[in-house]
Length: 193
Image 1 (cartoon, rainbow, N blue to C red):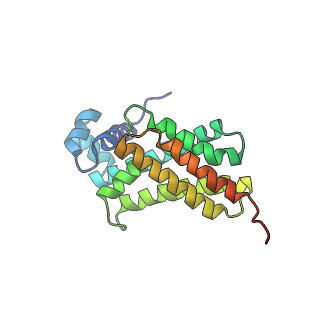
Image 2 (image 1 turned 45 degrees about the vertical axis):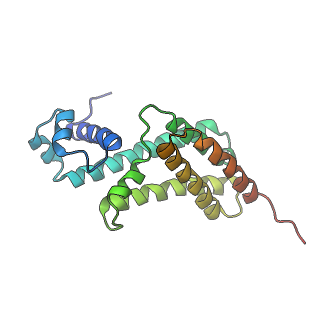
Image 3 (image 1 turned 90 degrees about the vertical axis):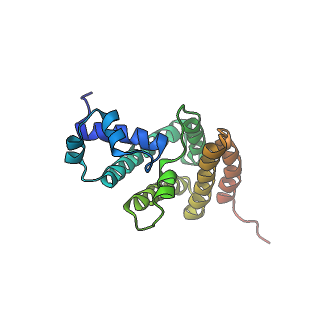
């Protein structure tokens, strides 16, 4: 595997620092030091820290969604199984050393204006995760895939926050138990009166 480009190397180092320490708390000088590059090199690839923040969010979105989808598909055999195995995939993430919550939730806390490009990118990431869940619900034949995706995503988001804020790595399992109720209801025909 070839070595990452300077640009990719800077993104990887900045991503690690932003995830661990936050966006505002991580200065450009710290990124330069950790990446082992000059200020000139950093600014050759990124016109501002904000441009670098956006690049790290894009990178994290790509890597995270691919990882969660692979794990979800590995853990669940069918689309219906995967509606619940996504919680197991998140549980594995919560148990990782260095887990510091969701970078996108952290980003919107620091970039609260809904017009901020970093906030927009974070919202887009969340929409793409919901779309993935909706796709699973459609493939499984749920009555209302959109509704089910919103319900399951809300449980996932709550589990992420609980795992980060309270350190409760079992939050994914509890959310999965609650999700089971929604999944069963999404495939059950209403009883006729």
